[in-house]
Length: 468
Image (cartoon, rainbow, N blue to C red):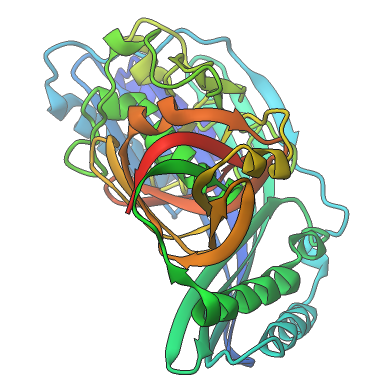
């Protein structure tokens, strides 16, 4: 990777008269393996390298990229970004928040370097997982995927920031179709970690898959119709995690609030006037934290060269902080909190989540259950929906149980929760101490950018919600 090209791009933009310019030079090496029903279906290796250039003038912002790193091609991309900026003709000149100039190198350590693991070892490990899962029941459809990628990124700005990041990531996922008699249920799980090959054993994919198969078979055999009406609800880390991501993380993205995403991934019910107002009970503190070591959403600095940090989006039930890049921060009169991310050199950096979760409490799972006279324990979900403003939403349970007089009595099929964002968070009355996370992917932007994220939380209890 010719690091001089980033500084060359920034200098070329300044020569054209740009008020500001930044360049992201990136190289990613990636390997993918797929098994279908215990047979190797596909294996691929590729290298993706290029540079993305952002230019700001009095008239607007332009972005261009190229995978050709010759000076001629980079200069051409700079001219294109400058032309785009000059063509914008904004009513007011664009601004970026004032941030400290950074010079840094950050890297995620690897105990077992991903580059040292050959394809055969990866296939053998996947085959072992497939054999363990397939032995636990009738599974006519099985798909396992393994991805490892190593990304080196350099961010250079005309303000003097120069940040290099090295991020190795390991991902494994499975999709299972489980059969019991004439019934079929499906399950999909994703595991992700920043770091080396040592992460594969930490995923415990086979154990997780076996549990899912056994649970789904039991659900098909024994599951009863879920009751309807107003009752207490306990949600597991999987469920609280997706709710944190969808009904807290997304509406707190400042670009959504400002309307930039309205015609793409949606808007937000939030606005600046709501900062400091109540959205949930005192039990609700939702963190957004890219600094968690080896987490799937980890980064040391964002794609604008701003140092990463923990953000508390909801704090003790109050709307506390939006997610910002430098442009949205300037428009709201604040500073960036390091939330600018891109999926690659050829995509602009936009406001994105990393690791979003409800902070844990002090209760054991058993204590939460004992405090429910009649209710549902929705441990995982099979489906969710939410409107484009992240206000009205619906969650359908997968592994779920009926609670009567403080005890779990039977499995129930597909309990449904339909609720508003404030309605959900105001109903939270107790949090477990079992903080757990699930790897996911988040889509946003146009062209679409899929981003590695983590979400989770503790087992959480809600009072008096309507279930159907």
